[in-house]
Length: 427
Image (cartoon, rainbow, N blue to C red; front, side):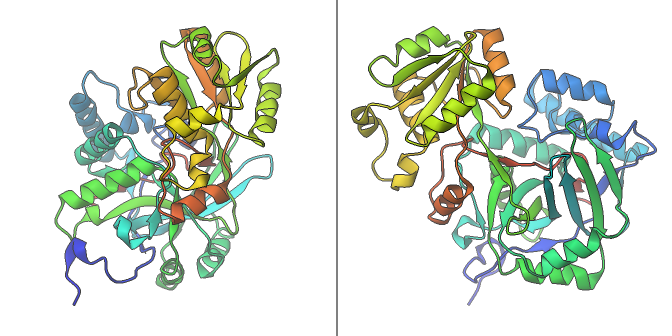
């Protein structure tokens, strides 16, 4: 006999996507749709990126996803006040009917990605429906949860992937033949289009197809953990039972996988290199960034390798001492996990060699943009640690085994732009 509420996890369930009344900017009330969008909150390089986005338009979504104020509580209340004001002024308006949304991104280099945005049932880990592949940082989850509680909204979708190529894909392909609800090109050169799917038959086709699949979290581990925390806090059924997601069928639209780099505050490159003496091979590269990354890619084919930067040059570190790895990497994990560059970086370099806490913003920053990481290290006197990306099949295989990678190990993309459609829990 199944019990009701949150404990109903014994029956095998797949992805359950629900239509919702999306909140969207009124294009007549803002400078342009492109000027109010933003990358996801954790991709914005702070504070430079925040300032740039805020100046792009007074209604840029960054004012909700990354509010700027003196204390966390003040920031969250400011975001809630801003959202209420924009709703009252008609800056943001709710679509008249619940819908699933087809979202397309394309660039000038042949990249095309399409997926479906909806409110996904927040499942328990034991159900094996949504697979994480990275650990999360509890302070970040607490921060995102406080923001969502204050705004009572899902302000940006997280990115999930699945292998389908079924009836959902057919609905997507048919939908994009119609005129979109909105279309805009952002300053990074990506063209974004959004369509609504309100026909009950089409919604059912998408839902029945997704019900047979599980999904991998490509981007948004902290937001998914936040959804789970907030769901647990509220008696079911409630609006907190669902969270805003973009589901991309990678059988039809493969994603790109890139590395997320580390910026080590307060650790000069010279000190970082001195600590590696006798533990790694170190080679100085007097080459521009693209060539240095090619050398890193070649070295990564035969073992763990990293690029250090921040002193005007690049330093390839590779061939770690096997005894060092044996002493510092946990032995109770699969071989594929033990050999990850991110594992060696966190377990060996950060914990053992450099003694840097991985969850302290005062000591370490996680940055997606390679050139920005190097530039900030050179400006601040710290050390940039550049990684080579891991292959998607390795990520998915580990996730299916229930093994999480070190936090911020991968960057799947392209990521959905924030600000195109939001979900208010009380609408």
